[in-house]
Length: 288
Length: 288
Image 1: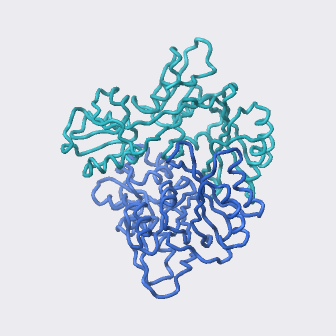
Image 2: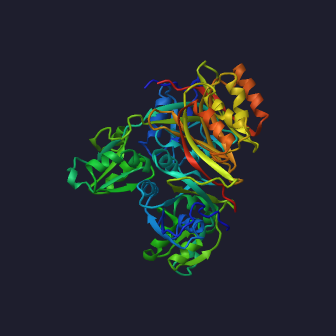
Image 3: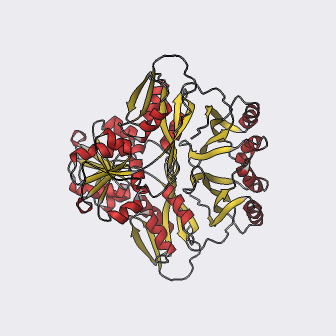
């Protein structure tokens, strides 16, 4: 996988980067891909997504990497909610990882002896057909992450985990079956958080969060300044405001940098129609 | 709570209604509110949301009630995905329930003796401040539903559950503290599924699912026929198509019945801009 790399780092300063642990998660894989061109990185394992936002917000780390969206499961709601609630955090980059699930155990084990499969609920759901076909009677146990599932194998008999090859390697386990996911197009998009966004490179995206006045055509009118300038939306989503029931905030991503002339104009026009508008930053679009 | 009631039932035929069990869930409360005006209902407990869709689809029940959206947590993704995937299912009604969380135990127990609190992950999250303040050191255990948490109390010592007053009553348990949620505006909206939608009553909503051709302004152009007729959107959301990464399907709800003249026109115009458009039905808007 080719990586966009962190575009704003040019000197040799040591940087600190937080990712969602434990060791062996897809988050760790994505983070290390993204920063692979740098040798002076200190990686910090965080226990939960809100902790990563807090570490960036309080300037304890320079960057944080958070899962934002999976091509099967959809958005990671806690990430969207934290983007809304973290005043200082900007998005400085993105990275997309192909998610390949594997069946992993302590040692070669006969199929009929396997009694338990552990993994993150999403991974279990994404391998449902494989499990139904091969292990119709095993007990499925949900744990916090795919890596955690592999880590726990040490202390459980007749168990396997579903996780990445990297997780198997990290904890010295064996792969029983490779690439067992039901969906071939399984990707997760991660956002790289910082306190400044990135300079334009000509292939940029911009992320905004907004809320609208409640009247017919509000969303249509908000989109008009983008549509008339041929600005392509790459994502739009809504989440509850949590303040008033059935009042929503919107998360939108579009092509272009917030410093491009047409984006400046569109954002200025759209802003007048919003209750609130927060520009989370512009960053190079991922290229595989 | 006043209830819209099931509008299409006029004769005395016995009807079957499926809801998400076990006994004591907020789903059961909502279902029984909705059908409270009828005496000839047989209620059927389902174990999971996809089962309810299947029971309606295969004509084993007449209606099914599924949670669709919570005012704090947002949409129930599995419900949206199943609406997309169930060809025969229509939405015939909606009901909104106020969610009040309570701390429940087998018997009065001293605060310092309480070691474990069980509930659905959303309920635990929604009572985080109460727990942090009063029980900073208890172990939190996630289970499938709030009702399941109460049911499990029977076999666990020094434990409490977070659930509805109705769940406490159902399982003969005591309420230790009432209304412990962090958010005063906690509501869940349930959809009533059937195989036909409802007749217009003059206060209707319509639910559609669509996918768009990938080009700039696609969503803007889709919304135009609704905006120019002053049709108010009450919800718009996107979910991954699961077929091609970063391709989305949209879930939209608007005011008006699909048989209203302006809705017919808007839907006809919008359809030309879609890859796919599925009209899930019109139904009376909930009125509390």
